[in-house]
Image (cartoon, rainbow, N blue to C red; front, side):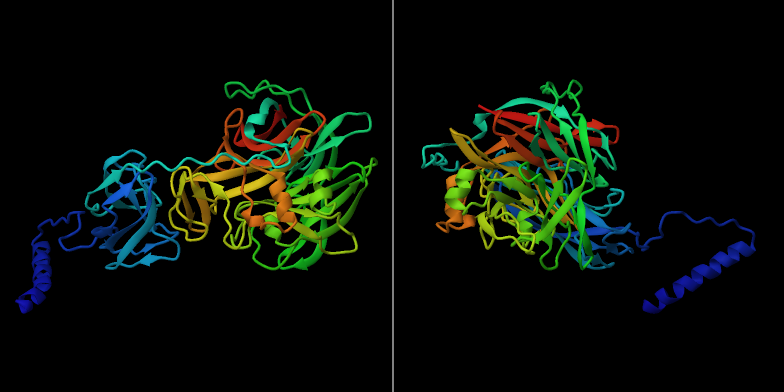
Length: 548
């Protein structure tokens, strides 16, 4: 039989040639001949999933598929492959509708590959179908056979025990909570100033009281070129029904231009400039500002600078300075109250923060961060810092449980329940403010949290969505950390509140990049990115809240 098979192709070829010689027309079908291999094809092998889960439980799923096509599945190419949910197609029953092949993988023809991802169970008890099929990630075209349809039983999660009430201030001063604030109004920022534009720009905020008693705000546009400027504060108008049109636009009063300085070259860094938050010292006419490197894996870098701004436009630079644990403090500069500084920090009234993920998690604070520094010495390259708040060496800030990490093992503990989770690699705090009033006080970290499916997908962090929070800390807890009575990572927020900003929160990359507080008027100013659609851009907006 084997010999007969060997001569078959030759026989067929001879027969075709005979027909052609006789003048008979021969046509061939466009369909692959029997036994031919499709370019993309797949065969389901097996899956490993739990038969029963709790509502909102995060669990690991493994689905093994065999490449039965002629084309290898390679990442970052037209043959990049994923699994997509079925029954019905692209359903979100398990928290996402796709499972990626993964960075650094290639599946050759004939090989089996196990697609692996954490998924999240539905919030509603019952039975839920579990079925997937391979697809090309570039165009979404399905191929091959789908997996078997498994049924998973979703049991109701036991109710968590009630949370203990927040501790009251030990010194009799009320610790701020979100209920202490009322929305006062908002205003627009200029669309273009010098070489900087509002679209895609982040900015800190700093309050300046002028000699005539007027008040201004410092802002800094980072895109496409850095531009520091001052604006007057217009009348506040409330955003209603998502309509920003009635808001007034802040008038530019002074343009300072790019702020930055050369430094001894370190790796690819030879100059620094403002891209973090800042604070204005009117008595010294000095702006303290911070700079960060979005993808730095080397040694210590200077992150703090100071610029003296004269009435005639002259700018004199001091620094820059290196701070310990620099990635904890890349967010910016804020001010501590004098009474707090005198009691806890040895008179240090400047503070650096604000914590959370920057590129390369390891050296970053896993939650909000704050450290008190002395007035920087121009003759020194470093600043003396006292830690008030920082999460490192296993310490983790709390968050809600509305997330799951699909494929990253760093900063990726699953939530205990929908209310209790752990700070992830898609959570940041880019601004914070310390408030001390005769009747109330607190440190507020303005936090942006990734929600839904979190993933490190082919070199980029992504999440299904985002939520905005205010984290309130008791200054007495920060003071105990400064005195060494507790670790900076043991300081927990006294309260956390999920916030919806006037006009909406914007996309997943919108956040509070700058904040400052006017003690006289008891007004909190917040610079929020991603607020107002303008053509293809989305411009920032300043929201203002009053402490009751």
